[in-house]
Image 1 (cartoon, one colour):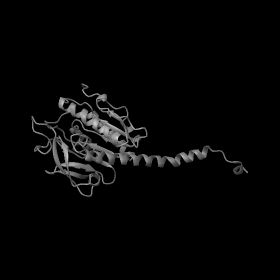
Image 2 (tube, helix red, strand yellow):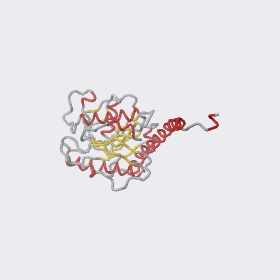
Image 3 (tube, helix red, strand yellow):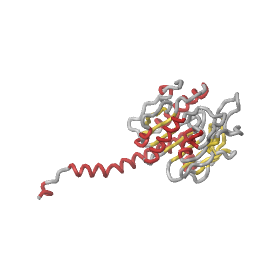
Image 4 (spheres, one colour):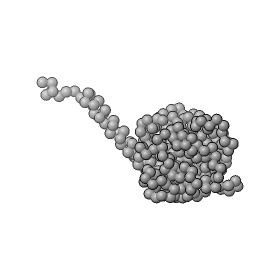
Length: 285
């Protein structure tokens, strides 16, 4: 696969915090089959904005590029949270579709499997997981859900041929969801440019946001921080307040996960310390 986007193209201009609130496992494919020049520019801009936002919120990260096979995607369990960014379409065979839609592009089944392994590990470790666009679709497919191969009436979701790909789309937020609590509103204007979306929901998931035509734009697990949005809050041409709210809630959850892990490890350290401490003279008499 030709490398058109390099890691140095997406590294933030800000230094990492000295004492990070959380350590985030960030997963994305910087390159994928048949990536267009327009998408190269989007991947560079969106990824850099996402990573910059994490640093602005006091987190640091390690970036894992599924353009190439990952050595150990299960290492996501050892981070405080998992962030899955956008990219090409999910391999249709992952959700039981034998024949891909003619508009399918950018498919890399190996990258999908690496992502599923990271999701499984982070989920088993009870880490917060946040997926954007392709990332949201991966979360749904991981839970056994399916995707719409192509949205026929696309006008709300992306531009027409020859027009800018991304559009400002009204998205309704479902009351009572985690997403509604995060955004504090029942409708946002989202930056969107997608031709696929969630179809059948995966196990344990609920719809958290819908487009005006009923297409699912957000999913979540009500029992834990397992959240996906179809739109691109990391598009710096969109509302900064929504981006900061979503990333801020994720970093908050990751920080809480860090504290829980530290608290759980403390009794183990104390027991080990007690075993290593010799009894006092009084104890021996």
